[in-house]
Length: 248
Picture: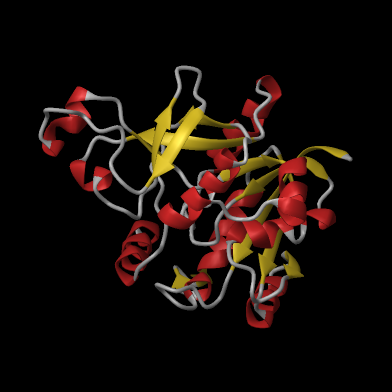
């Protein structure tokens, strides 16, 4: 088994909220190319692979020389897509960089990979401080409750932890609140287990947050604090925002 880390970018063409977003043009390039190129800038990554269910995405990616693996179209999640190609990877650490993150920071990927050197966690993911109530109440942003050592205790779409006797507008000033930046580093065995015998749990099915499958099954997820704020493309408004950022 190789040392270091590989990265996989799961890229589903017919996403539910914004179909074909991975091929959306941003500053003259399809979005997936921005993700691929920024991920490739991370010094800790040996190899970047795009895992897609679409021949169209595969052909577009191969035009600029990307490594691509085709996956089954019925896989339910990006993690399932990555797990299905883990046998194509050589590294012990596999980083999931989602295909809708065209502004992902290479230095954050490097920080994530480095954090495995001093931590025995199965999975590591970054978190950022919540300072705005709009983020706290947005169900599209996964909130995280952490232990003092950085271990993730729970993820939720709801505002957590609940700050009793304080109006929600005052929560960010009265408590330390965290949101997840949606990239993950996995130890290889976790993805192998995912393929073999890790069905969805009740918590995941209730919250529709896949990270809860791992917590419920007893895997350790640790968090690292980052100053970066995730900018993902889920809607047409998100796409317009990213286009403005890259145009400037």
